Every structure is written in C-alpha cells, then in structure tokens.
Image (cartoon, rainbow, N blue to C red):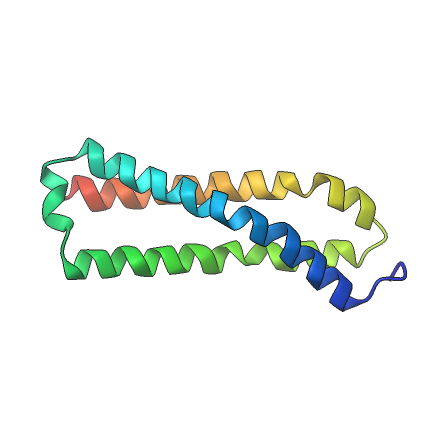
Length: 115
C-alpha cells in the first residue's frame, strides 16, 4: 500500500473532506435561503416546528451523503494512483457539490413553492 496504512489513508481523507464540509453546507444553505426569499411572504408560514424539523432531517441526510466521498477517497488512496488521486480529488468535491446543489434546488422549489 505504498508504505501507507489504512489509518494514514483515513486520516488524510478526514483532513481533506472535513475542511470542505463547511463550504458544502454553506452552499446548500444558501440555495435554501434563496428559495425561501424568492417565495417570501408565502414561505414565512413554514417557520414552524414541523417544516423546520423536515429541513433539519434533509440537512442531516445531505451530510450523510457527503460522507460517500470517503469511500472513493480511501480506496483511491490505497491504489497505485494515490498521488495522482490526491491532486485531482477536488474534482470529486466539485461534482458532488453540484449534484447536492441540484438536489437541494429541487427540494427547495417543492418545499417553498408549495407554500
């Protein structure tokens, strides 16, 4: 394994991905806030316990989905392409962020336009 242990790969993955999680969450939160604002004042009645709990659940699920990058990252690091992967893994972040942003947009549209 290129002189690296699984522990080294996991530590490197955590360092890389957790530094980017705030960017991921801020981007998704901005999308939700944009759709909330775009549908205001109709969306203001969604400031209640049940809708907020649903948004919280969706935020937790989005963060669970973010963890899928760890599987790709750790296994790619364990391969012979470790150094190449480490210089291009930002592409996985961008693709994942775009995918999550698109899903968030559709959920926000349904959530706030139905208000």
